[in-house]
Image 1: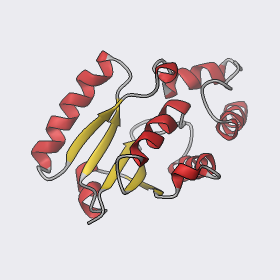
Image 2: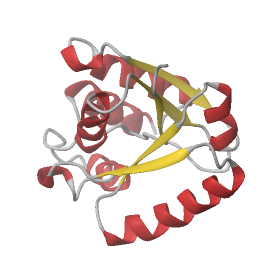
Image 3: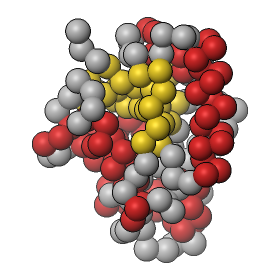
Image 4: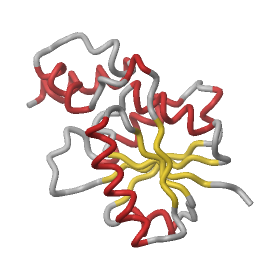
Length: 164
């Protein structure tokens, strides 16, 4: 039986921290499904389709990415996990404040779907301060994004923000 894990997030945009956690997850699970959460109540910079495309571009040429798929969903995460037969949710935790929020979400998800577990992974120390909101702020002010996101993401973000 394949152990399928779901790595959900807004990924608006995907960062080096996200990619670090994703690479770690590929060592733990047979298949990892990166799932872009599309929440129409939030103002995302990129559409769901754009985020999926950027993630796929980031994975090209990575030898560790062969068992990764990328999709998107709207709705309750545990419903999507059941639909794709994922038994584990992967959540990245950078700091204590992340853990408090993620712990509550994990307990809620466990109540809704007892058969789905949550695993917390920490990114490498060099990525613990990176967040998508920080990246967007740096991009807005035309700062150097090379240590935060892959080149394709930086270019797409700069283009998207210059269009606004």
